[in-house]
Length: 85
Image: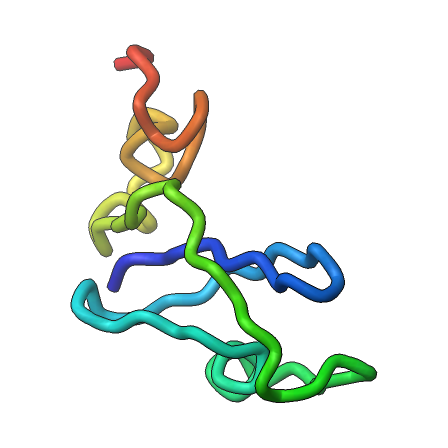
């Protein structure tokens, strides 16, 4: 499942969350519920924005392959677009 970065409008926190490509979270409450973190002092209705990082998908086989190039195992070089092979 792809991961996305969201930024909270109130505190500037950036939180990474996994969800389907067609989903979009719009509030701090939704983000906290999805990630299992506490709301803290931020009201649940506070807007969050999905950052334009693109969804990062990690193939299950890459997680088990220690010889896989860095870009096959997660984000690197500015979002997984590096030329290390």
